[in-house]
Each structure stands twice: as structure tokens, then as C-alpha cells.
Image (cartoon, rainbow, N blue to C red; front, side, top):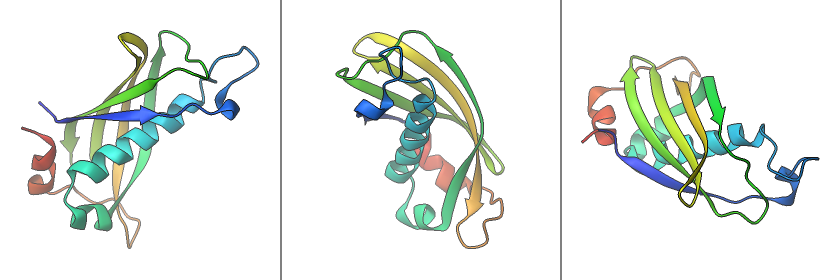
Length: 129
């Protein structure tokens, strides 16, 4: 099982849409921030310096709306690594309430060349117990 990261989300007034709740598009930003934070926390510093991530796909299931003063946490899990791709699950919660579930896939890039780069097994091992 992958090690998880609980990433706090700070809701800003600009996140609120005409319906009075967080605009659905903001969830993509939250997921990106949370996944990158997960990588930066668990990967070795040299790997963080040498690699960048770009999103390939997000599948979001919205369950409940979030509001301006909510305390929201994104829980990130790296499900698997295959070559240059990583597959993440992110749960966005307000307390015990599930607000959204996100499945996403990401491509690892070499930070210098910006070309796809395989994740070495020893680096991937930092994410799996």
C-alpha cells in the first residue's frame, strides 16, 4: 500500500462561484497541488530536483459542495507507477464528509530536457511500504 499525504486546502473567496460554493474547476488545482506536495514530501530531494510532473488525465466524481469557510483536506495515495506514468487517487474531504474522489494519471519529465523520464524502482520504493 502506498504512503498517503494529508494536504490541507485553503479555500479563497475567488474559489466561490455564482452558486455560492467552490467552483468545480478549482478541484483540479487542489489535486495538482496535493499530488506535487506528495511527490515533494516522499521522494528523495535529488529526485524532486531532477523530475517534473504533468497531468495526463483526471476523473473527478463530485459528491458534495465545498464552501468558503470549510476546512478541507485532500488525501493523496500513489496507486502505482508504470514506466513514465504514475497513477494517483485523491480524496477531498470536509471532516468525515467525502466531497470528491479523483483518479488521475501523470507523466514524469526530466527537469532539464522536459522529455518523459522513467521513475527508477528505488525512487518508487519511497512511496510503497
